[in-house]
Amino acid sequence: MEYTEKVMEHFLTPKNVGRLDDANAEAEIGNPACGDIIKLYLKLNEETGIIEDISFQTFGCGAAIATSSMTTEMAKGLTIEEALELTREQVADELGGLPANKMHCSNMAADALHKALKEYQEKHPKK
Image (cartoon, rainbow, N blue to C red; front, side, top):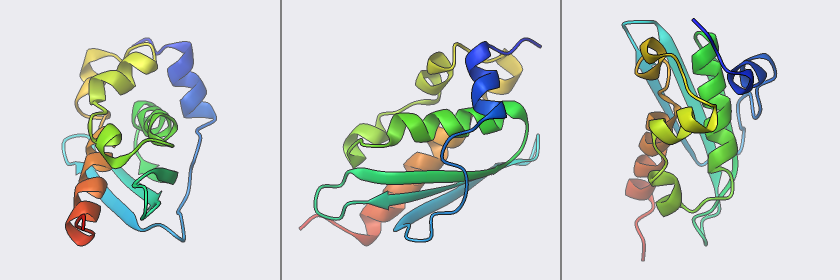
C-alpha cells in the first residue's frame, strides 16, 4: 500500500491536533469495521459563521490521522456553508490520493465536520 508524500507528512506531523477547550461545536464519528474514531472540535464565530479554529483527536491508522489533519487545514477560515460543501474526495485529492481500501474506512473527517456543523446549526438557528 503506497501513501503519497503529503499523506505521510500529515500522518507524521499532523496539524491542529488536540482538544479545543473553547469549542462551540464538536462531533465524533467512528467506523466499527476498522476501529477508527475521529473527534473534531470547532470554534465558530457566532456572528459570521466562520470557522476560526478547528482541531481533532483521532484513534486510527495513518490515513485516518492524515485525512483528519488535512480536513482541519482545509476547513479553517471557511463559513459554515462553504465547509458543508467539503467532501471526502476533495480531502483525498488534496492529499494526492488514498489507497482504495482507505477511502471509505479512514476518510471520515469530512463527515465529522458536517455532523458538527449541522448540530451547531440546530442549536444556533439563524435569526
